[in-house]
Length: 409
Image 1: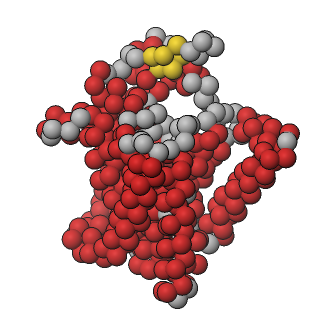
Image 2: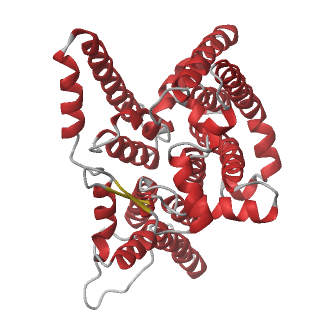
């Protein structure tokens, strides 16, 4: 029996209650600061959260479907086919059964998803390191400098929730659940590939370990009697061992269906075949170049003194992320967490466009926070509370400043 099977939702929720209450408090602080800051600048905090930048694209998909595009003076074509469909579907569904507009429905979905994401992050961290680390991991995710995005009608919260619970299902051996959630994550963002990779890697390693323990070291020769492995006592155990392979195989089969289905649909709709989605992304000047464009972007910052400070900050930030991942490896995090965080980080840092959005794109890589959560959990409670409170205040101010700026997060 697995942890998911033996522990019902209510005890799991009670166990996560301190983390969720702390998360709600941090997000409430951020929203209050945003409301005050926006009012001082004669702007609507509600509009900033629900009806700007990517939120408008998702709302338009929910309202009118796919097919809308914008042709820019330089010849670029921004098509709404670049945006995966799960959030618009949910916006449409919520709006159909409530008086909410599509934009406000998206805000509600994001808010509920952020709580689900916080719960999922706690579940993963609690499973691996214990309850105190789980609480700290959730609080650290809440106080990220770009944490305000968790309260926006964007897909980050929805994707993180699906990814975290898929990883938890993997860690507890619920392969079909992991596959279904991975498929839904793949319908949310292109980075759903990271969840698929985590499920597949864990399943393959699980299968290899099972084979190592069940297959005899030497094959029988002709005329030899075939015997069962010494630890298998009877035929029923052989059958149950084989039966356990089916959920794993089914989970692997289900995991890529969301992303694969949408990408193939886009290719058919555009008439450009399986790679049609890449052409859509190219219209946004987005792609994967191994980090070359980002490296040039950072290097260009050193052409003048004021911008050189920003360039140095970017280098420190990237180095910190790489260091955190190295610590995750050194601390021997479970393989699915390492694979997931590694793919999310690689896709975020090596994308060829939207450099200012990279902190937001890295936000779903919550396993990177686990080393910091362990260090925070090891400190005395008053000190940990003071650290989290101070960072939460800074994050709230930065989020309000960021959203009231001119560029998209």
